[in-house]
Length: 179
Image 1 (tube, rainbow, N blue to C red):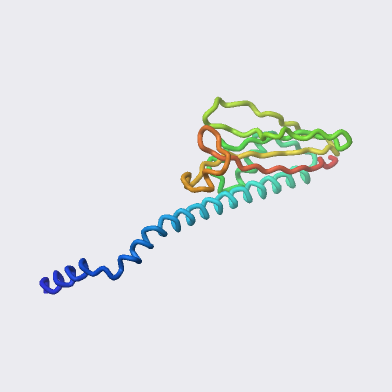
Image 2 (image 1 turned 90 degrees about the vertical axis):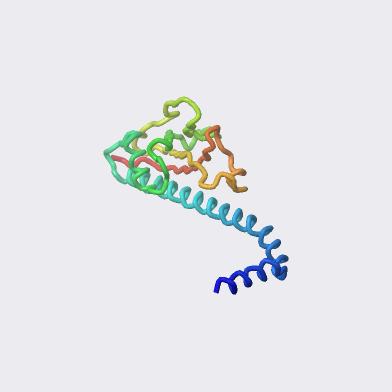
């Protein structure tokens, strides 16, 4: 029995019929795996960005319709993190910015979003104002996320901070309803 197995294995080692396919397999397999990992990274980014955008919209709707109450920064942050369930370390990584804007004298938000950076000292909130009745409010949320597969082409192409995290941004505007 073992003699037959040894004979089969010797024949298998000497056979060169599959060597061309082996070389092609060895060349293409890393490329296919690399592409698959990049696709998973893009999918995770898209899912997280969608969840942040949806959570921000839901929270703003709640704020807008609950007249008579003005939730504070920590309450809004908790409500967003409760709804955006797939954001890792949401409470530590999420930064909110809410400012009042005048439609007739428009001033845009700063071009760079206020995000956390784990490689720097903790910074206070840039701007967070509770609006009065019938005022236009603009809210922007920024969450820092670590790439799942940092060596893929997509994770390398995205702008990252010193800690290696990239930013997810979501912005919305609303008008404070009369109380």
